[in-house]
Length: 216
Image (cartoon, rainbow, N blue to C red; front, side, top):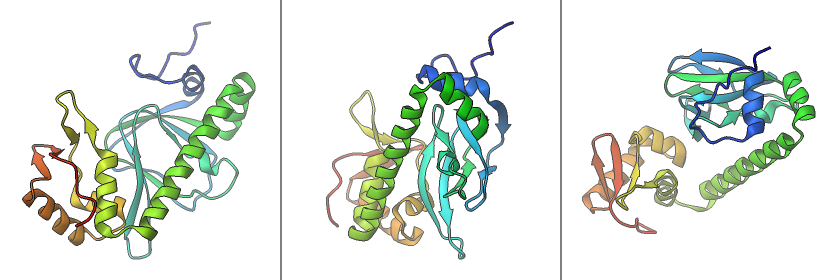
């Protein structure tokens, strides 16, 4: 009997145990804008991103949104509900996305065959908990500008030419959702940073020209 095909792109670097788990899942295709997980729902499904990109977020009763993060190939979401509790956040596709969907029963079988993956999953949960703790600390202790700088520095990646760039360039609403602020305030601050020569919009990228000041 032929072995199941590897659903991950061959160039993607992921652990052997995660590749094996993805092969156990049901591969599904989603178009942009599909809500995979609704906050508060109960489900036992884990979503492993094979291609594309998704966003984890929460909204309040006035439709104000806070973004926890964006996740691409090799990431997985839904692990926080594997205890049987409600979903702690919503997840939506940001572009056409392919996922391997795994149930809790399948995950338990996988743990038996690959006990090392339990530690991998635990490490992932701990890393995300640390990020959420740092975000909560920022919301409590930093002003809007400080939170915006932290978001920009987190998203920026140093290119081969030494410049720090964010691609694709996030909208002001996306930055506001990540910083826990209003779009109007972020737009004002970004306009000031552009005018001061700290950042520059270049096509679909945002270039950080020099170190962002610690206060404004």
